[in-house]
Length: 463
Ligand code: GLV
Image (cartoon, rainbow, N blue to C red; front, side):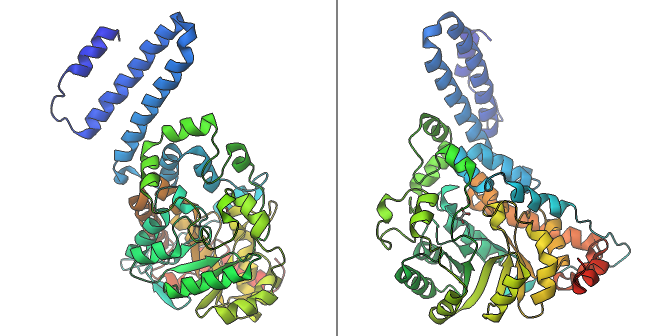
């Protein structure tokens, strides 16, 4: 389109219906045409190329970003749609921090692949008109068999990310677990919610901090503690290194351009209550200079942490204790012996020991060994309600979801988290119906193809 036409179009009043979506579409068309014109001009004036190209890309990305921000959430069909939207709206360094796994990402991929390989048993002609997803986790009634997992740096996917996620969880009647490495502090989340949430602990060398932070969590009304035991040393995430992933992000030209093209994200972060590790700043010595998870883990996490410390934690923590990061039957038995109210079968979402088995492949033997003595929870790769049905069919009482809600958060703040929860609940309900199940508490090996036979072989130790 030639320049004069463009200017004329831009100056013309919009005909009704002149709503935001139409305006955004027009702006998108305009920017694309504008870029074409700019590129033609640049071809003839090579010295000014870089300014025009960078400026043009900025304009287009902003307009695209605006368009996706106003896109109604109802156009989102599944968690993968939320992921695609989050990828567009969250700066690359933060999106990939959540999305990635450690080293070659073998375990990250195995978590998904192994879930998808488990076939569900279709049953017909069962009255499934009245279905109930409710159950309980460590004695707490929940509307569906899952909780929002602890996510480090959650508040950098979207400003006040922990507060918004906790509120969405509260409204959906499922537990929210706040990470030690959160951006909003325990106190921020407590002020913004009305019901108890759960707290996740990383034990650091300074045991005084652990004592302190648990006292803060108890004072804030947290009624369950999730002790993460699979991250004494950090598995390297190559993508974080390549992206210069720090808090705040490293000042690299590509990071600046990336952030500048995500105005919705930038605004949410600017408005957020905290821009650093909310639970640590002002509470841990030497924290002021710490910017990266790797730096913090290397200098502060306690690699000497061992089973004896569980006793100590039980003495200083008054509520329920959930041990997260168990992938081995022997470890599961030890956790139970030490009095864990629940364990989470988890490989940290494929972010720690690369080459470890998928969580779902480790679940049946662990559930078989300790499922009657403690609650066995599951995480690792859940993207659909059918995945939850698979995990419950293989012996989990409930699941923790991580990335599935983080994508929602990045895609649309609190509405995005609510959307993720809603998608998973609805998918689970349908999957239950089509396997002839009406109550979550009735889900068992019968929903898995060959499930009953597999259960027997695990019992005999032949699996
Ligand atoms: C922290 O929990 C991480 O996996 O990055």
